[in-house]
Image (cartoon, rainbow, N blue to C red; front, side, top):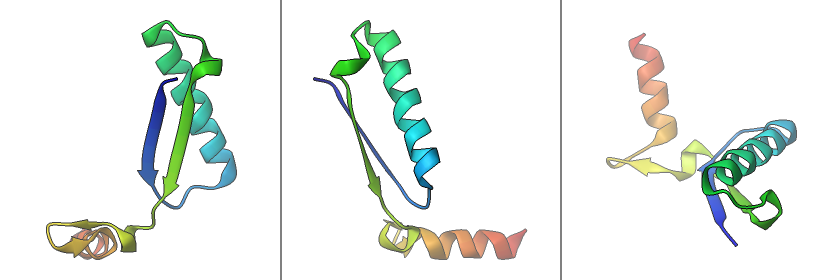
Length: 68
C-alpha cells in the first residue's frame, strides 16, 4: 500500500480533498497501480511550527513580505 505524506498548513477542506484526489491519481498513473491502494496523509502544519535555518517559516515569510 503506497503512502504519500504531505506537510503544509492553512488549506481548507476542499483544497485538501483536491490535493488527495490529484496526488492519488498521479501516483496511480505513474506507478501503474490502482488508486484504491493509495493512502494520502496530510499533516496540517502551521508556519509557526516549522523552522528553517533557525527561524520559523512565519518569520521568514513576514521578512520576505517586508522586502517586497
